[in-house]
Length: 57
Image 1 (tube, rainbow, N blue to C red):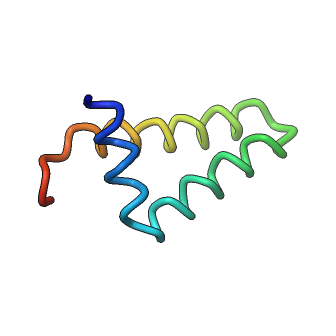
Image 2 (spheres, helix red, strand yellow):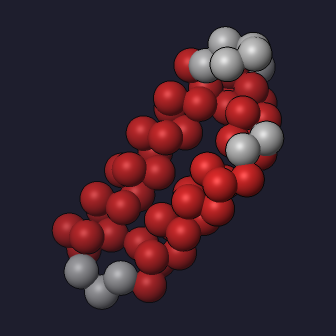
């Protein structure tokens, strides 16, 4: 349920969803492992925070 809620919380915020997509695309295209890892870590942290949100936030 928490995973679904996180996906829903992100999908209802188009700017956040676009930001996550951009982070993941930049990581995929990066030739610098440290940079790619940092981008994916940022995306992961955002997803984790979205899963912890309560309905209505």
